[in-house]
Length: 427
Image (tube, rainbow, N blue to C red):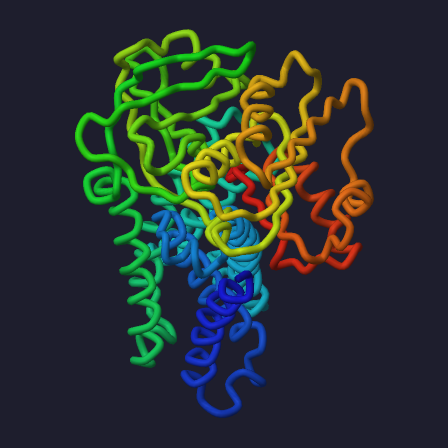
C-alpha cells in the first residue's frame, strides 16, 4: 500500500525534474550550477506544495493510493518540510549566483522595486511563519487549524510570483503546461476545500437521540434526519457537533456501531477543551454533521483469516463496530481481543465485551488493566496464540502503543501487511 503513495510522490517530482532538464540548453547547468539548482529547487518545492493541496481535499482515491488517511497525512507532513527546505534555498542560491553584483543579489533576499521578487519573498515569509507554528510551537488544535488557512494565501501569492517571474516556465512550453496545470489543480483544490467541500462532499446530518456518559467517556447515539452514511466496520468519520455556544470543529471518530444499524454510535473521550465543551453542552436533539466514511483500517476483515484485536482505551471504538457486525454476519474466524484500560473502573465497555465473548463462538476477550498488570507485549501474544505469523493484527489506541507493538510484531516475523492500524493524530 505504502509503495503506491511513494510512487506517486516520486512520479510527480520526477516529471518536474525531467522537464526542467529538457528546458535547458546544452552546457547551461554546468556553466550556471547555482542558478540551475535554485530554479530546480523552486520547481520541486512548488510540485510538493501542489500535491499537499490535492491531499487536503480528503480524497478517498488518494487515501487508497497512500494506504490510509494516517499514511497520507504523514506524507503531507513530510512534503511540507521538504518543500519548505527547497523553497528556502531558492532565494539563497539566487543571491549567491548574483554575486558579485551586490545590488542585484540583495533583491533576492530583501524587498526591492521588483514586484515579482517581492511576491516570492512574501510567499516564503507566509510559508515560514505557518511552518513555525506547525513544527515548533505547540498550539491548541483550533488555533493550529486556523494558522493552516494561511497556506491558501501562500499558494495564491506564490502562483502570482511564478506567473510574473517567467524564466524557464515561460520559455519551455511542456514545463509551462505542467507547472501551470499543477497550480491550477492546487488552486481548485483550495477553492473546493474552503468554499465547496460541505456542498459537494458526502456529508450527512443526524440528531442526537441518546447520550451515555461513563466517566470521562461518553457514547453519543445519532439518528439520521434524511439520508444515512454508508460505511464498513472499522471506518471513521469527521464528526461536527453543531452547538451554537462552542466552536464547531470536526472530530475524527470511529463508527462504534454496525453499518446496518440505523442509529450511529460514536464514543468520545472528554480530553481537550473541545471534547469537554461538547460533553457539557450536547443535548438530545442537537444536530450533528457526519463527513465520511473514511479509512481503510479493516477493509479486508471479512477475509477468512484469524485475527488479533489490540485496543487501548478509547481505541476500542472501531472494534465495537466490527464485533457488532460479526454478531450479525458471523465469519467463524477466531478473534482474540486484548483490550487495555488503566483500571477496571475505566473499562467503560467491559460488560459489553464479556457479553460478546459469550455469544460469539470464536471471540476471546482478554482484558488488561495497566494499574495491576504489565503492558502487553508481542511475546505475550505469541505465547497465547502460538504461530503468530498466521494472524492479522488490528491495533487501535495511543500512538506510542501502536508503534511499539508494530515494531515488536515485525521483530517476531509478522509481515507488515498483516499489521493494521490508523493514526488519528493528523496534526
